[in-house]
Length: 444
Image 1 (cartoon, rainbow, N blue to C red):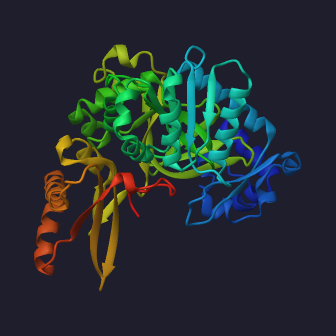
Image 2 (cartoon, rainbow, N blue to C red; image 1 turned 45 degrees about the vertical axis):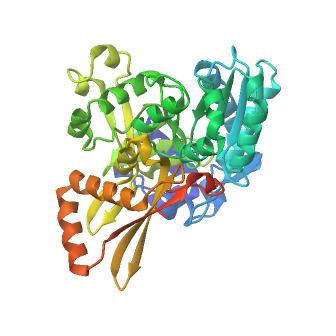
Image 3 (tube, rainbow, N blue to C red; image 1 turned 180 degrees about the horizontal axis):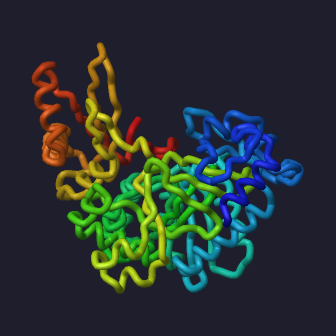
């Protein structure tokens, strides 16, 4: 893609984009405004966001998110968009999960309704099944995770492998609901996941729970994109190998990325132009509603192969393209404790690394409660087993946060003492009681 020429074409043809840019096209691509959901997608009528006549050719309307508090965008889709998507999903399933050689049960455990991601993926996997090229059976329990588990229990013996398409934060719930049945599924379950950042330690944790060796890269596999942008980048085995290298050398991860929670590494789609502006991933892409310099509100950067020469082993580095990207997660993916950032991924990695006897179930949430201008941070730790101790988790969590940040330690101890109350509270809840009927967010 030649981004400036593409932007000029969109400026000439799309009314909303001409309005936001102005009557004169800037001379440089970098002078074009940064657009986002609020100042662009939600600010103009749908027909003004599309190329001329594109609304005459659509076959589908879907929402950008069924969970957004800031308003959904109702996206039009053209048949050609969905056909390309079906082919890319089929290629992924064949090349990564080998459905051409394994009898496969595939369950989609995502939200449906108007959310375009869930229903588009459901269409794609049904079309793959309808081709009859593969021994490929699908079920679509959506976020009724108990029903998903019942289907697995009833049918798993008849299949070589089970693919569960879901959000990463639903995996611990599914595991808890399966209970002892997990033992019978060792080496058979794979999770193509969407929608959330996850740590490398979570991938290895899922490998261990489901009987795979820790170096397997396909057990948990994702791509990066959204209902707004479509696919931007995707995990490959070679990119995951480099992430694993950094994850196993946290001092290098800290040096290069500023955190021991190694970011996700992905190869760029050839159909998208990516910039990093003020640490945010900014996307230019030709699609049903064309986007020029669209701020995703995700944090990341572009990695250049030669920048890592001498740090990453050559056998990992040389198969990689000249540049790829890393993703840290949402720009707001932190709890702000009196001015100190507590990173969601680092807390999750700490909890996953606890001894299994502590009973951590793989999921937590945190809520800031403000009373009389005093903020208290209430963590809910989802656990397995009856003997999980909330006070024990609180002690361990505060110890970790203090050890991870001298700034936090100073603030926490002094503020708690001044206010005569602990500013972090912890309660526990059995993860088997948590249903996936709402998209999980760590910060609620």
